[in-house]
Length: 218
Image 1: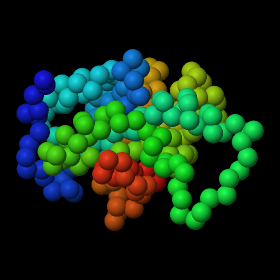
Image 2: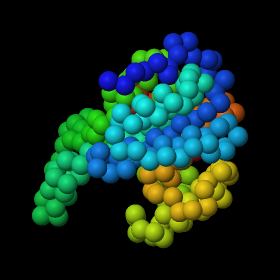
Image 3: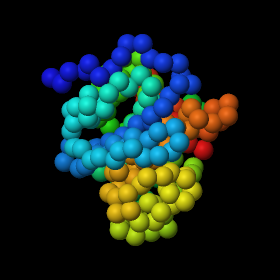
Image 4: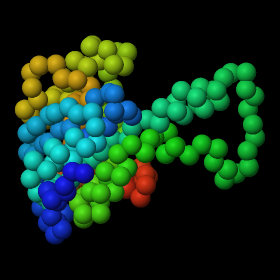
């Protein structure tokens, strides 16, 4: 088991945050996940790629005390629902059903996987500031969605240039970044917006997942 001595028990006041850590979490360990570390001046300090949750914990143990950081961790999709239940229910041969008011056939949070939930609980249990976010919501809110087919080289290049131009984030490597790294940068930006705007109007809370707020930058 990886030691968790990188976390201090006495976090600094919420306004004394200096680093913002975004994590783009993939649904499976076979796909890459990204992590981006950004300072309060929107300078990228690190961008890395991992596969296992334990790798994130080990990375943070080398990063140093995290009591002056804010974490924003992406919600990975629930693969089982996307490939099964949703596809079946969306068949056009199904007739519409009238439902009673208040009945909620699908809870939108069920679209997401529990992967990484224990990691978030561990951070929250240590008194750190942790948020979740859904990258598609945030991209749409910030007008970052590319006019190209998703997960294509053209879409990736467009997203990387748009992040630099619209969000004024500095220090992004000139080489082409993987989508996991770009999504991690957006997550770090969402964490920054939760603190570094007047009256905290730079983000909104969409709900919560496992008792951790889900936010979207504005």
